[in-house]
Amino acid sequence: MISVNGHQLHVETYGSRKDPAVFLLHHGLGSVRAWRNTIPALIEAGYYVIAYDRWGFGASSPRNEFSIPYFNEDVADLHDLYSHLEVEKAALIGHSDGGTIALYYAAKFPDQVQALVSVAAHIYVEPQMESGLDHTRRAFEQDSRFREGMTRIHGDRADAVFVNWYEGWRKQENLNWDIRPVLRRIECPTLVVQGMEDEYASDQHAWDIAGAIPNADLWLAPEGVHMLPQNMPDEFNQRVIAFLGEHVKRQ
Image (cartoon, rainbow, N blue to C red; front, side, top):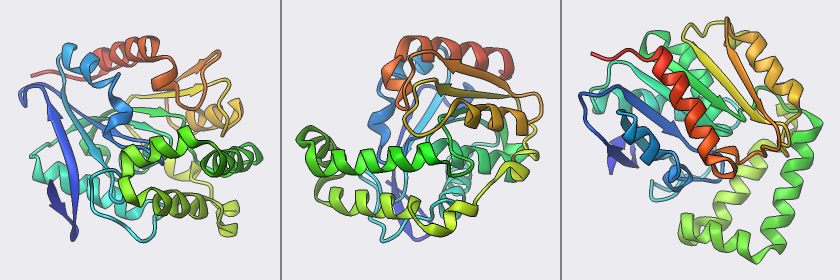
């Protein structure tokens, strides 16, 4: 547990500190467990892996409200983790909400990000995202396996985590949110990833992310869904590690 900004984060590190650092930022209802298929592949590829439960999730400190969709506190937490772990520069891999946080961070602290992989991130709210949120709400209310999974990750806070996340995204003012102008400040090599069967976003969403970032690469995965790192772990790991190998410098 590491103390940042008045709360504690559950942080796991793997590999040698001498290797290039990679931060993993999980999706909106997830935790470190979401990266269970990715962490071993990154270790084997020779990276120093830093994965953590974002504030309010998993084993990290509870939180009354999520800063959706601007994620200011989450960006501040990541900045403090850089300092606490004495990381000067790292690659970021972020999924869904974690992908949005990674985009914000790379735009705000370009000197600290060596490469960026944005997976199923959100940069504005579109109708498909709204229908996806409502589908997830119904699953939480009616699917016992979904609720059991939430309880395994978040314990007795599972209900509060879900409600805060869902209500955070469904705020009316989010309909005017659009961070494409922010993305133009990203300087590092970027891989934009999205499944073509993503329940929360159209293919155009991924094209818009890639189009807003100078020289970004785009991988639209046929048959990939929103949980693409779990749905297609082998191909996901291969493509991400190939991208990092091309763009992340080693000592």
